[in-house]
Image (cartoon, rainbow over all chains, first blue to last red; front, side, top):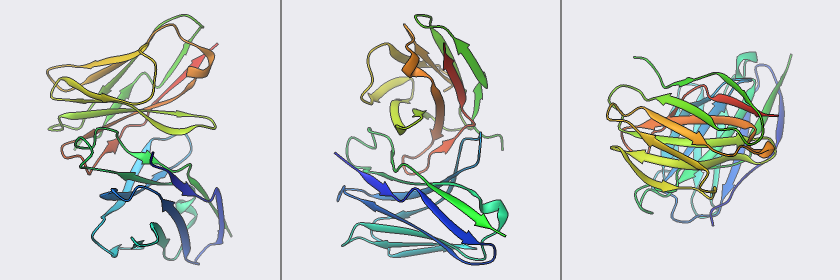
Length: 115
Length: 111
């Protein structure tokens, strides 16, 4: 079955860049996602990338996809205290029954911001 | 545009009881997904409804069930509650499979 792996914690200084990494096993993954979860809240869709793309940029966020190594990363430029949250990597195989298995999530990376 | 809404915010039940959780999708979205976020287990796919039909379910026992109404809102029912059902239950809606937008969740506590 599919598996998505992330490191559990990342600590960065305010103003630095944060890079959160993720690896996945399903070579059929068609879309890969980054979600943000703040304490006591639901998931906020930050960005996603189609599997035939290498990179996607959206303001302070840059997603890089290395399909050969099945490695996905999220870079947050100029990290702020408001970026403190859990970041989930997720994937879906759109063509497996039209997304019938839902999203497969990693365990999440806690981003800790140091002043 | 209103986002996905879920009710209630918190629900406390005892073992053996039944719980009903509700979800209203974003206007125009026809698909609703349910996920369970349990401590230590992460986020797991529960159910997918589209156009009123259950399209698929994750690896959960039959006591987890639900339905989708003609207005695309959805209900998740959990029968014969067990302690390990305590979790945050998240609902997501989508118009196309590649974009799922989540609600704030319902925190279910089973005593």
